[in-house]
Image (cartoon, rainbow, N blue to C red; front, side, top):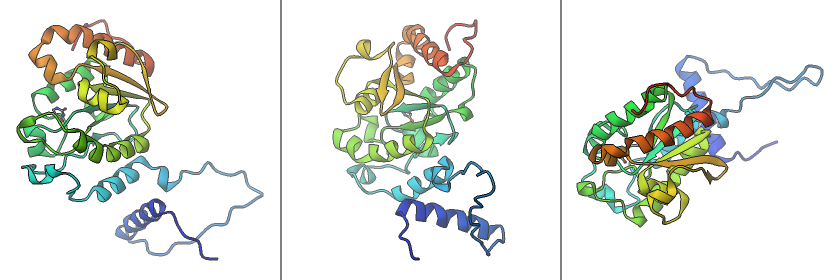
Length: 240
Ligand code: URA
């Protein structure tokens, strides 16, 4: 009986078969489920977040969906980190360093974000980091609504693939885009939001903290709230 495969499942299977082919495996047999035996829990290939992320990256391609592709971007900055991360940080847009290196938060703001992550008792490699938009806006201007609306569906798919326990929106642009609300940071911080069934906290953007380090204390309170939710021990040391 011929069955039509869902395109996402087809891509995931193609990817998995390509991987086995690279290992020199070409023959595949379908095992019928044995009703006598207790069923093993199935890990579907389509639920593998690493595979899903690769599919999303492929779908994004050499994106020309918004004008940013013609405005000096060097490369697309997709996202980085653990596909199984419980914690996801979402910033605004790549800057010059990120555009150069193809990775989010690698410049000065990124160094501070790394320190914030370390202060939580975890490593950058444990979390997943992405931005609302994946291309650098010229002169680091704030992303425009059309750019956010065009690009964020890919971020939504990344979130759905990773299924983090907690999302931290870094700064007002990330918070307002994800939550579709227009409120000052004072009303967004220090509390939980529901983002499509996932807990979302908002804190100051590291680039803002570089300009106003006095707000690090407040940021640390936000991160402690996140740590509690994730069951991470709050270290005696204060502030990143
Ligand atoms: N600022 C952001 O919002 N994202 C980055 O990746 C770097 C700086």
